[in-house]
Length: 110
Image (cartoon, rainbow, N blue to C red; front, side, top):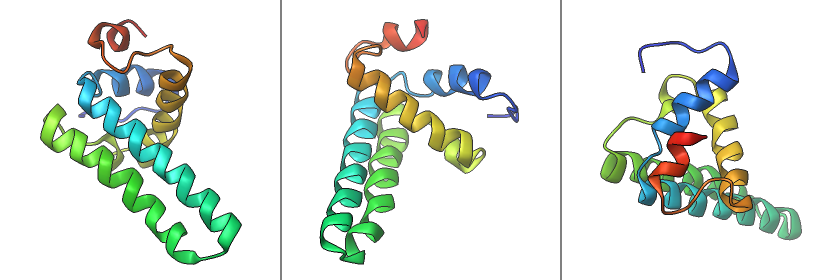
């Protein structure tokens, strides 16, 4: 990623091209789901271990997807805020069916 984006919508279009591999997207979704579970469990139990586990789950699964399946470097290394925002927009689009868990074409069109 050579370009430094200042507009989130332009960044997000780039972000989706960096997530064209279905396994990478699936791992992002799994990691983000575990983040939500960790935060909810922390709120219920008050045990800080769950809060500490949240970023490990989120970034661990996402980075596994990038390094092993997508074969690229996560955008979070260069633009952490936009990347964090993109993670949750993509999560919602996967959850709502706007982006497919399995088709690369859906990601390219969005």
